[in-house]
Every structure is written in C-alpha cells, then in structure tokens.
Length: 143
Image 1 (cartoon, helix red, strand yellow):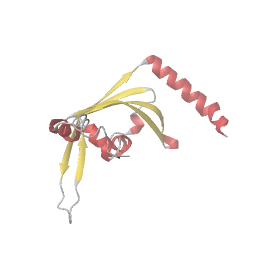
Image 2 (cartoon, rainbow, N blue to C red):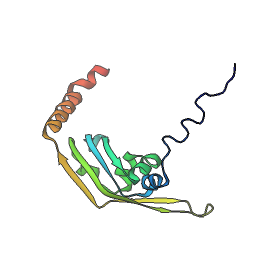
Image 3 (cartoon, helix red, strand yellow):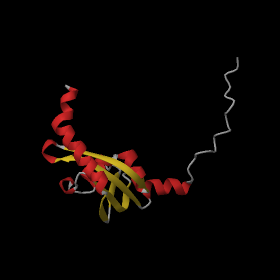
Image 4 (cartoon, rainbow, N blue to C red):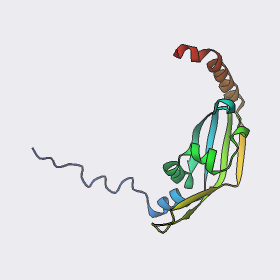
C-alpha cells in the first residue's frame, strides 16, 4: 500500500493569508467587542465573552490573550465594567519594539482611543437573572 497523500498539493494554496492580511492581523488598527458575563470584584471573578475582533486584536489574542490584554495591558479599570453590558474597544493599535536578542527583549504595547458601552436590555435582564440564580441556588447543585 502506498502512503502517498492523494490530496497533496491540492489544498496548499487555499486558506493562506496574503502578506497584507498578515500585516493587518499583527499590526493593523483594530477593535474588540466583548460582553461582560460576570464581574464580582470582591471574589476576583471577571468573565467575558468575545463577540468580535479585528486587526491587531488577532495578534493580541495569539500572544497575550484577551483577558490579560483587557485587565492588565490596556489600563481599563475592570471595576467600571458592568455585568450585562457590551463594550467595544475602538481604534486599538499596537507598537512593536524589537529587542537585540541578547540584553533587550522584544516588547509590545497596545493602545486604544475609546471604550464604547452598549446595553441590550433583554440580554442584560437575562444575564442578571442567571447570575442571581447561580450565585444563590445553582452552585449548590455542583456539590
């Protein structure tokens, strides 16, 4: 039996990003839209769902992750982010600093211009009721 792949070469050129796509993914101006599921500061619980992102947010997702980016790198005070709200980080940009490979490490800094808050009332009410049920009743079923 021959172990040769019959599909070899057919799919090589498909799904390959262009150089412009790569540049946009790593250093293009972008945005992140996320929904705050839970934000309980006293218990150190911060849970979000990423709804959409573009530009350098893709590179941030691969390198540091969205949670670390939002909580640590962008300087957003998570105490100000409310449960049940949808936020959009607009005009997200990145500055890459290449180290010398010996004494100076590579570095990356992310910046944004605006944090837009949006409320979808039905979704907010549903999330508040879900969180209320889970915090008072639901966690007992896990035991």
